[in-house]
Length: 216
Image (cartoon, rainbow, N blue to C red; front, side, top):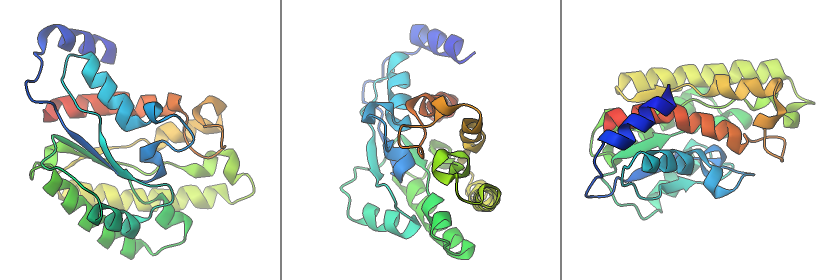
């Protein structure tokens, strides 16, 4: 179905005179740790939009492996950004869960980050997509850990960010289910045994495209 949509758009959608801009905020899952930069989900999503005839710049990415919500906030404060952006994504929280940070702390800091994301979009909540936190508990990296506990905690953090996203009327994309399929499909995990592969990021990007198109 997505292929049909993209094909039709490539025939009917005129080129944008001014390039579309996209800001991706997050951590290792946003920069695509352990895969080529071209395989990260923001870059793949931009490539997919470009394939439809949409004139889009390469994404501006503010993300570092290991970042928690407060570290992302500090990274944003130190970054050179050029708002307003036509599209913004926010994916953050796995390192809060990994480090055992309190849920209430996450809620407060995630809320502030989402408010910033909306501001960066020119105060257009419909142009902001929150992605759910992947479940690293199914990966080989977690083989000697309590996988069920990790999954439960990820679900709690995702319930929080989903509720906050709904409160601000932004889009929400649940990619956690995609990542859990790695338990039965090793090709969805990168060579480091922890992060998603380019194949999995491609699925995230494909799921983002309909949301992006309705925001443009």
